[in-house]
Length: 133
Image 1 (cartoon, rainbow, N blue to C red):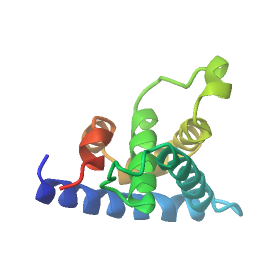
Image 2: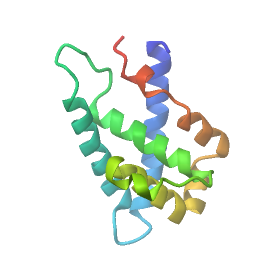
Image 3: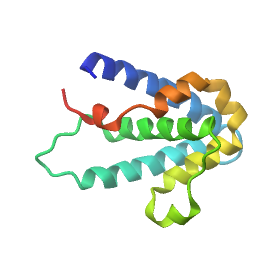
């Protein structure tokens, strides 16, 4: 992946996340979109904290958070898969929240993401996005 393609994909992810967040924040009294992104940010900060100082990272915390937010919702939106309850203690909690959001707001999220788009986002490689150009 070159720098131009990475930037284009990141712009698309940001647009899609904005639409998803709007829907999730306006379906009840809870701001599910904001809550989910905060959870993603916390996990991204923890993840980057393990990176040695000598290793450069090609994404900001916000970019990484939105990347994983869209990726995880895309993974569960059109599939019948669910995260294993036995892995709850050893998995990022955002995986379970993404599943719950995709399950509860399936109709609304399908209006935003087509099956082709969801498949595209769920196949994106984090390592390619984290590269520094």
